[in-house]
Image (tube, rainbow, N blue to C red; front, side, top):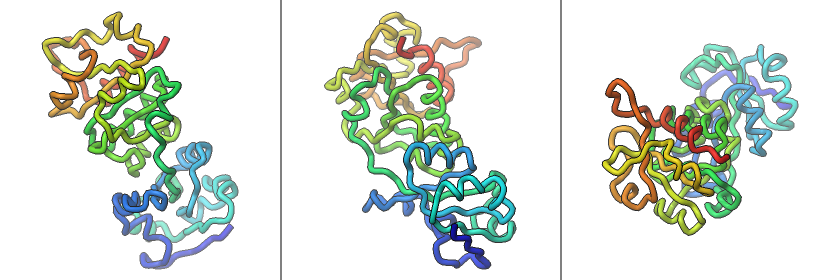
Amino acid sequence: MDIIKISSLSHPGIEVYASLTEAQLRNRLEPGKGIFIAESPKVIGVALDAGYEPVSLLCEPRHIEGDAASLIERCGDIPVYTGERGLLAELTGYTLTRGVLCAMRRKPAPDVAEICRDARRVAVIDGVTDTTNIGAIFRSAAALGVDAVLLTPTSCDPLNRRAVRVSMGSVFLVPWTWLPAPVSSLKALGFATVALALTDRSVPIDHPALASEPKLALVLGTEGDGLAHDVIEDADYTAKIPMAHNVDSLNVAAASAVAFWQLRAR
């Protein structure tokens, strides 16, 4: 255990917690060297269980033998940065109410065919850029039995700090990767596709044909613009969630939970 007490914001090694942007942490040029930040003992523990490699820890002194003790032991010989509460709040931009942060190394993104090989229900996130929605969708996907999550390149990074926090570590529980090809390419892997959208040909989400599909990909777009016209046109089905009181739609995170439950593999 290498406990390093910091007294300034310029201490070498702590830039990952403050000065580096999410894009810099992700390192698009060299993804194998990318880093993400996990918060709270629970979330960090889930990430470790999923095989992610810790790089360093940051916590207040009181947590070294408290909330972070088991994590420090589990992480082995990595730097553990600590300092006064005010300094750490200035460093991260907020008080560490959850006790501990962990910088962790990203894994290479798996192949789409690989994570879809045995999947029956796949979520496709198309153009969703709100980190809170991404985290909430992943939490619902993990809880409601979705086998894999695919994201188009225009979607937010699931390992964004806030997305990880909102997901409560669920982003580490469901296999996911980027989908560089059109959504329609999933048909070659044996999936029927259903676009969640409001159109004249949308069927109710509880339509028997949807539940009977052996392999189904549920395509979710961002609220506002929703899914692109070509994505909707290329889908095998278009479905909607029936609404009461003239409500037109749900937030994409709420809609995903309804769809995942209704169309779960049986």
